[in-house]
Length: 444
Image (tube, rainbow, N blue to C red):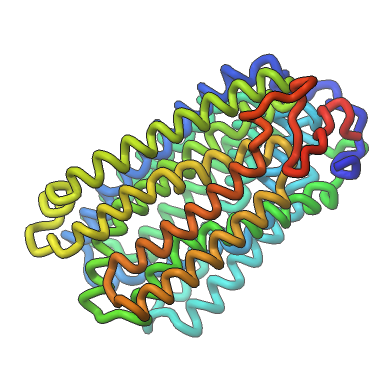
């Protein structure tokens, strides 16, 4: 870890929060992330409903395909530098403007790559008669959105979590309002994508006015990329684990089994959204506390404990009330999905633990352990889903396979954090091997 940074500490003028603000930043970051992202999702449902009711089928298909493909490709091509830069800024080891400048090149590269892959996939497998203007706007959305992800990470890292959350909520409300107006006026997918791309551009303009990149001595892109690649692989592995069930069930089961799986996993997708939001909401505060071993241990144990309690509560409620939770919103015809929904509820515990363990390991620079755990979980989960579907081709097999992979991943991640739950002579954090991790002032 000694080669991660080439700096003697924060440069004058950095907006990074001091470690003593870590507890407050963790609480505020978690609250702001939950409110902004979940509220945004709920508001976004309004646009989906209006589209389904009033827009032409071609509009719904093109708009949904382009944004869905672009979002997935953006995740898979991300280089992880934004997460690493955010961690270093929150911990006070890098100035925010210097980290932004160093991460900008790799982030732009990954965004351009995502745009190119989106074009390729659309041209090869996309729907017919797709407007060229709609595709161009989607590429603009991908590139600008990728830069927004970097700015958002660093705004949270500098303690501006309320500003970042407010920006997300406001822009989403404006997007939905404008989108509904476009649909009512008879606009098509291209018109909607104009609104989407404009929303991203406005968010970027506001974020850039708050935080501007600046070249700083000793802050290099290569250092961020070194650990960013590991973070990117871990992120890809966990996404593949969450999505492999659809591919396996669709490939090995009947259309009825796939439909049952899709209905049951609506709850799973909601759970993953909550878990992911909790993880990135806690990340800045935990990173800020990394230099205070006792405080970090207390905070990590606190949030992991709350996560475990939440996971158990969801599992109990979900298992007991799976029937009405499934049939009331989806209809009595989907009572066949109830067994799978029960397994989705049981999977809540490992899923939550995975996403909350990630920022804890990130704060301690244990990115390789995190990546190895994620890859092992993804491979195991996919293998389990395939074997279970071959043996018993039902929707529950895909969910159980995902549960197996998530459980292994959570177990491995927590093994890397076992020292947090055991006494240590000097209270300093240790890695999986028991070696003491360097404090921030020792990382040069």
